[in-house]
Length: 133
Image (cartoon, rainbow, N blue to C red; front, side, top):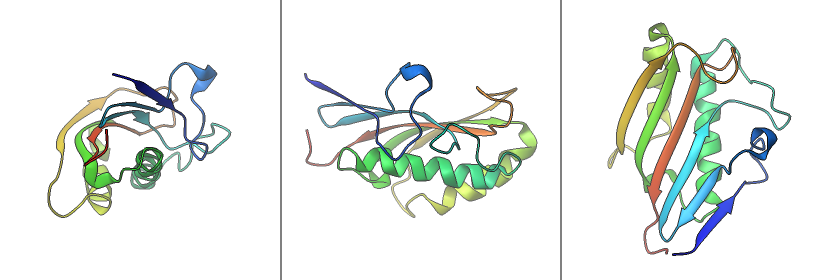
């Protein structure tokens, strides 16, 4: 099955081009862990986990749009949160961007740190596009 490798132009490019943000295989879509960064790679909202979550989900929506999908196509999420003290705020902000029904499976991990010390949240997703593939 053919694979498409995509780096949407409105998401910060992967560091050193080490990976692609989106890999599409048939109607399956895999999105690399998204973080809150501007186009130059600087962390946005360094001390605000809720704002970082909103930025992360904006990136996820852009990644899905690049293959003709939406957040309603998501079937699995993995969320990495730095510090248990940030969990409640991250969960509240996440629900703002999720559909009211048909929620995907979800795993949340509390971690000691991410790729940069001011990143507080990273989310990766898998999606299945309806009628596409």
